[in-house]
Length: 412
Ligand SMILES: Cc1cc2nc3c(=O)[nH]c(=O)nc-3n(C[C@H](O)[C@H](O)[C@H](O)COP(=O)(O)OP(=O)(O)OC[C@H]3O[C@@H](n4cnc5c(N)ncnc54)[C@H](O)[C@@H]3O)c2cc1C
Image (cartoon, rainbow, N blue to C red; front, side, top):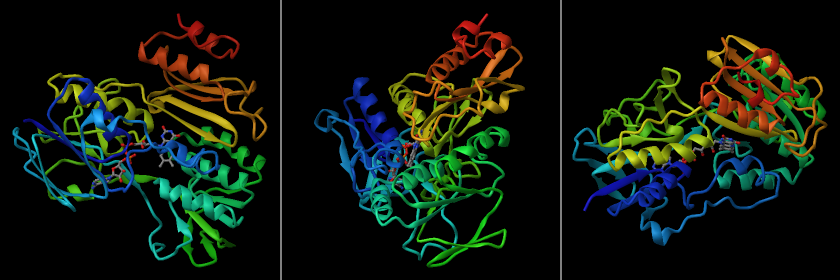
């Protein structure tokens, strides 16, 4: 009987096995996962779980119907023989798993501040256990220093401020979200910190941390009872070194447009993978939920004999300071920017997400084509913009600039 192994029990891993069974696959499936928990969703960790609105984010699955051998607390430690068309062996902490085909869905791990491993009060947020520990720590209203004003830093800052903590966010780059967006766009979110009563220091690095303080590159030493490091993630693929599988400099597993790795019987998907995007003609490594949700059905179809490409308009969202922030597309392809609405007229902190009449949208254009959209409290702009990009429709920039005209109606 044919056997498929899946390394990683996150959203992408679960979606692969669900799609395999839905596609009629009747062979054996073995999933190995490093964590003790069944697959759960991560976006709620920095939102509902941290805010105390939810305790659990376990993903719904009918495990009996899936008929999967699920090995939890079982880290994959090595890969042998995946270059053969006939399969190979996955080494794990609990023994070998032989496979005909393997899917790598092992996600990513937070980057930490070197030298801080010994400190109990220096944390990252990746797992449900991290979220519960952080939420419990917020109850004592500590002085919280957050390192990094990226997506996770902004969401953790939102929750910490909401819990009544004194919060200071330190960002090495000149603007919030600068790792993901141009500085002048990220800068538009800086006022949100002040409105939430959070101190934001930009262009400054954390040089050192001790039991009670952090030392900054501008010479300041600031008190900190709790330090949360949100400076990005790296693919959880160190264990693949020596396997012969090609990875990029960051460690992401390289795949073709069909999500097949350089080994014919091995696929990779989700945060651990960088795929060839036909749409943009470049390799994309997108560490966001939408990829982990949708790309696995392409992997499953290809495991079952199809030759489907994965070619989305990438999408993600963030909920910060009472605002819904959504992005779709690939802005580096843009040549100019068009605003819809006035970014300086932000919603008051605490306004329900999606309900802000003063929301705004940034549209990136290349010629008469929309290539990216960042929508703040304008979910309809996001949905319509993504559809326009997916269908490669022409857009009229003058009509696009009028927030009263829908993006759909700005197409020509
Ligand atoms: C706090 C937080 C908030 C987020 N919010 C958003 C959001 O608002 N919007 C958005 O678009 N995205 C968000 N994301 C990103 C999104 O959650 C990820 O893109 C998604 O979880 C990726 O799924 P995955 O299955 O590829 O990887 P993961 O969810 O990381 O799952 C991989 C699993 O594999 C396991 N594993 C790792 N190494 C091994 C090994 N050697 N052997 C076995 N198992 C292994 C890991 O322990 C993990 O359980 C957020 C992420 C976090 C952490």
